[in-house]
Amino acid sequence: MILTVLYEDNHLIAVKKLSGEIIQSDQTGDTTLAEKVKAYIKKKYKKPGEVFLGIIHRLDRPVGGVIIFARTSKALTRMNELFREKKIKKEYWAIVEEKPPLEEEQLINWLKKKSR
Image (cartoon, rainbow, N blue to C red):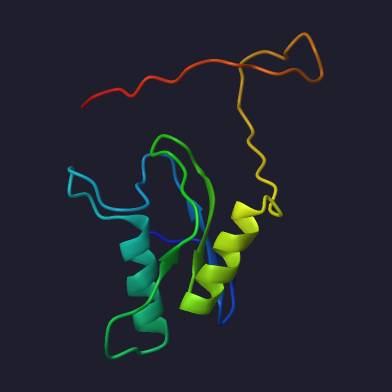
């Protein structure tokens, strides 16, 4: 199990999500990033019972980036409120083969889910 913890305190844990990892369970049955984080917390803090972990936000499976999980229900409630009120800014970066002609631009397009 590879898990890169970027930040951790009593309320939140931020981890690196690799491209191809899934945040929460789906029909594939693949091990989720949430399950990996729970196992990490359980082992590190020697938790005897179930580990609480709240999913605050998601990234699509093909995308890599930073995911923040809540370690307490209070943190989950507060973080959900910050996202709902748009007080948290998300920034997306793309890796391209060539330098774009403009320094900044907006792309509007549709995504289609690729079935397995």
